[in-house]
Length: 210
Image (cartoon, rainbow, N blue to C red):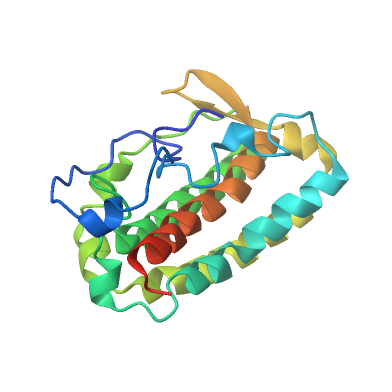
């Protein structure tokens, strides 16, 4: 599955942030802060074949653990910490957490559409615009973390009971102009939570917050 610059499944660039922040830049070298764990296609199980029970177990474990991983990433950070962009021009940690909730709510809905309809065309959304809405700006991150715990419990329960043929079911993404299987989506979202948690933990390390 093709993702945009910062691992986003749908369209919309991250909001521009030209504020200088020497601490965020310090020690970067040639590391691409957008992809702290590599791109999804670089992952060990990504695009390495079709359905596999062992790989499915890994995907489900990683999706199940995503909310806890994000909780640990922001442990003991205050609102000032959460409002620092993880890189110049990037989202803040607060926006990252709320984005994961937005993204995974959409993914869960797309799974259910694919399981109940024949290759449904999904509705993309502008992730950057969503990140600027009042709920993202005004609400604390624990709201989205609580949402993610409940959402991922339902999502994993759904996936645990999918048959092999179910994983071959597809959605059609009009921006990418291609079918995407639920199997490929599972791999993408297993990576997605870790990807964004690493944005936050990398910032913590660079800023000396640990």
